[in-house]
Image: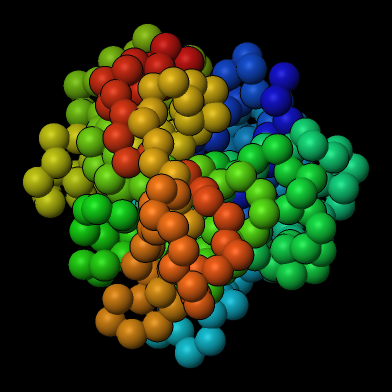
Length: 311
Ligand code: BDR
Ligand code: CA
């Protein structure tokens, strides 16, 4: 079984991704790390603990960054109109929000060092915890099996600004550090995730015929579905679960390889730029950066079928 650490900001689509990881027989979820993003980190941490408790999963949760490492960021913005005030669609949660210690980066370092060559990281929030782990111990890059992240918009417009996808925009310097490290990164960007959505009928069917935890996912997704329908989609975009499917079924995705840089200020802050692997020699800002991958295409229907079969 693959040893996976899930770095997340639950978050409605994060919840579906977490359920997928717990249900998949090939995934051994060894830890969850949390980050600010869809809500403040104390809230996303409480949400991760709540979901795991509801699903009877005994997985440790380590709270992480409360804010970005990028200097001079605009004031924090939590998308309550998408994920609800409580981050889980305002579904009632009988667990208090408590103060949390920031320990995710050190946990990542220690765990990667304890299992050299084995850890897979699925990161579906701001990249802050990963970047800070690299800052603490750059040597971990060579010890991680791979990093799969939901983030970026390479050929498509962004979702938080015309240039940027939310996970990257929320801490662009952190994302630039993650793409520049010598570990294999696969980004699952909006280019694909804006084509993987579940409509209300499919969601209801899953809640009825899927695993016992799917009812909760469907309940907390109601406002999220309404949001996406209000902006012209036929259902809810399952960004983070799409990235989770990459871990288990990479054949359903088409990747493009190249060096990636992220703009960390200005009106295009958070823009993900790729220099394709077959273009030689741009110097300066690109020099020495490894080629990473982005899934610019794939088979959305097969990805959704996989989610439905597992969940
Ligand atoms: C990403 O941003 C978050 O709001 C979602 O959970 C997802 O990880 C989509 O841009
Ligand atoms: Ca997320």
